[in-house]
Length: 130
Image 1: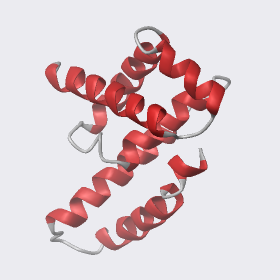
Image 2 (image 1 turned 90 degrees about the vertical axis):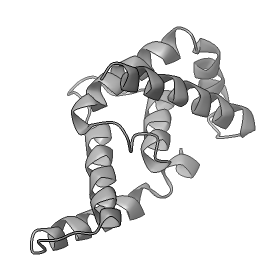
Image 3 (image 1 turned 30 degrees about the vertical axis):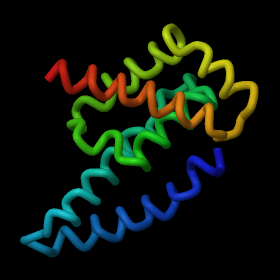
């Protein structure tokens, strides 16, 4: 989890600074707008329902997706749909990855390749449903 979430604190800190700055700026360049959007997505990903904590593998996969830009082309309103689809795929068609992540609790080559594969599938499915 440390490897996956290592940049999370820095990303969120930078997002908060940009968010405060953007309140006073009228024109934002595309790079700044993209950073703000990614920050908003990361905040949405970190929200959990009361009494329903996410498993390690779900948290790690979500944070990996947000940090590595898999959700950059997903609308913020589709984040919950993305999460539900991801959880479903981890539980069914990618249950082997789910078990491997729970067993190893490390982001090794096999786990990272599996995460990339499932994220690409889910992103493609969400984009197709637009």
